[in-house]
Length: 321
Image (cartoon, rainbow, N blue to C red; front, side, top):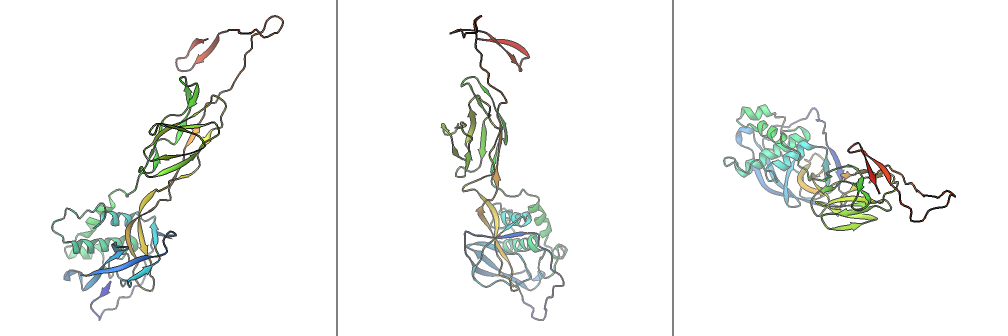
């Protein structure tokens, strides 16, 4: 941002601690930063200006309002994580997917951009501009603090990535004489997949696709499935951390020019580092062998006998042939 009154030189006595975690984007070596139109603040807010800027063609906002706009060019990209306040401003601010200004017929687009620019800077660095405060804006008839608090009251924008159940218990399936888990659903966009490494002898039944698979099995977002195994002693199962292929998330994508220039950020869809996992408790049973012998200890061929099994559901005995 450029100060238009040349007689003033702003000196910062302290730098507010920035509570963000910034990570370089390894998949991209550089991103483009370009200028758009010059935007002048309303006169009652002081003789300030900023530029409508773009990162890779998408609207970008300065994160340190009192510093100068960086030169146009190619910059190293960074993803800002752990700053939900900034993420919300970019998502719900002007031009974002959840734009709270879209129904505002009074404020023009230039001021909508300007207000989002001020809120983004505050969310990242606490710098409204030139040492101003929300009260300074309110004194000039700009109730931007209310808009900022409205945005911060909204949910963090995320994309669904989870399993309906993370702890499954097997039960006896009399129809197949196997043990199986309850149905489970992978909640994500349909192009997102996870690869599930199964235990030996275990099968994954994909009810959505009508397939049965073993080994390492890939499922898509929206698939409902269950696991089955033979009626034998099985070690309980833990999937380990499963990363989603093609899984994405909303995040601020930024440039960090340094040298007294502003950091700038746009809302971007980036690779999602989240993982998920689930566990299975198999039946804790055992196998027995029964032989019917005669008085001489010899096995009787084709012998038949009755077994009594305790039915824990009804707390009654039932006779099984």
